[in-house]
Image (tube, rainbow, N blue to C red; front, side, top):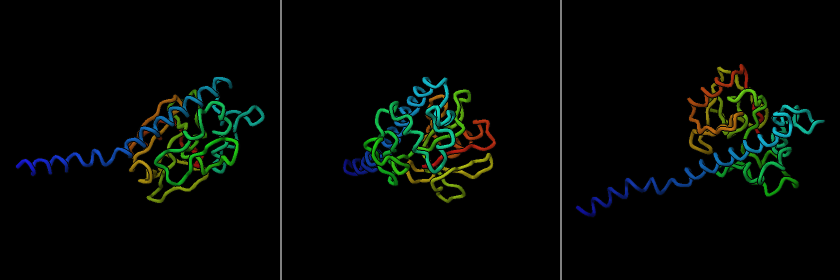
Length: 199
């Protein structure tokens, strides 16, 4: 009886001890996005409350540059506000590498998070950043400019957090979102089309 009880107990507890990396990755990813959100806020504090994608290149921003091909440039412009480029890499992202510095070879391949091109301090529910592991109609998206209308069939892929993702909103909050929450969050932005730069 004692052995049978131990076997049942081990069978129940084994998944708890087997899955800590997935949970740890999610927590690390949320922390990364909170730090990125803080960097956006600090940068905006020096730029009359505007994020880099709202400020022209001549004034130190990325307006027009942070499109899908150059999502990384947005983070590069904020390199003084970011504690380290490593926070731009989700630990569960096996398709990119963590950067060690901003000055040598920093590019899209070292970034795991999209840039919300329509984010603005005056619209707190717009997407500022987040995991870029989306799929549309079951097909994983590629890098570039992603335009999502309210009727787009978008979802998280299983690639990072098992059909869950993280969204950094313009108000600085981070939401861990499943697919229904993602769809609802897109409707809450108030935009007919949301533009995301996918690295």
